Length: 379
Ligand SMILES: Cc1cc2nc3c(=O)[nH]c(=O)nc-3n(C[C@H](O)[C@H](O)[C@H](O)COP(=O)(O)OP(=O)(O)OC[C@H]3O[C@@H](n4cnc5c(N)ncnc54)[C@H](O)[C@@H]3O)c2cc1C
Image (cartoon, rainbow, N blue to C red):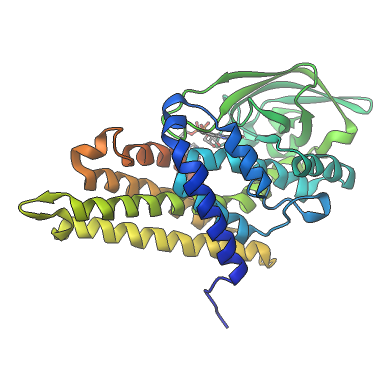
């Protein structure tokens, strides 16, 4: 039996997230974009409602919801602002490897911390010379008795300026590539850890993105999350679980593009009629609707797989790859529907176009998704 309907609980969750987006996110989105300001008050309000660490298990005090619920909330918040949504959901990226690979003590301590206080955590694989090529990372760890010492640099780390702790991937020897990689949980106040400059970005400017420097950072064995040789697999499995979120984010952004474009197409006149009467404009609107619905089906299937123990990671990559590209094209089309007005900040769609671009870059670029998909096809 196949059933595409959402339960009453899902509908209520969507309604609550939609109200939060309308009342808290949309009113501050343009200003946060303009000033590149992360809205801490919105983060705290979202945390109170359980919209921040959605998949943090209830046994550690978290909301304890599944991946489907997580993605449904992502879609709603992304409708309001993908920059704010990215910052609210970076915790899920950091808590997922702990959920997947952490010891009971680590889960109690770090998942418990996220659940008990409105704090942030970051996930850090990327480095100046290793983005797409995660196995090429160079941040080194060395073992000294029961402790590890980390040296290196991470970049493009979401929420790094505010994080209370970081999940850091490092290698014993870069020449070993994926076989040398381990993962550590590093507290913000550990001596030698320093947060660098915040990036001045094209889009998603309400989200915080910064560098992290590690200079002789001592980490105890208790904070080893994945031993040497297991870190790369943990990073990849984390992405498998979080890529549906990018599909959901893309869907929220596309829904916004579509609604703004339909409203404008009914109002704006050319050649004596509303531009929505021109078939070439109708084509763009229809394509937007098709892309949004197709991405929604993909992310919901990927999320359903994860919630039901169905191992089919190719669908997570489909949701990410298709959704990110669909969102970019949809945002470009929304600017086109608005004509000259699409190109200025008085109207909402130029922000949507700037915000959409990073969906094709973070958590594995559109090119890397094709490689991941092809690898599974050819396996
Ligand atoms: C706003 C933002 C937030 C981010 N947040 C985080 C975070 O929280 N944590 C984190 O660890 N990282 C984060 N990242 C980093 C992000 O994951 C990387 O930027 C991304 O993986 C791409 O790496 P790169 O920038 O080094 O590009 P590169 O790897 O240098 O790629 C450059 C181009 O070459 C292409 N390319 C590279 N290799 C291949 C190949 N084999 N075949 C075909 N094409 C290829 C890429 O697709 C891309 O088009 C974030 C990035 C941004 C912009």
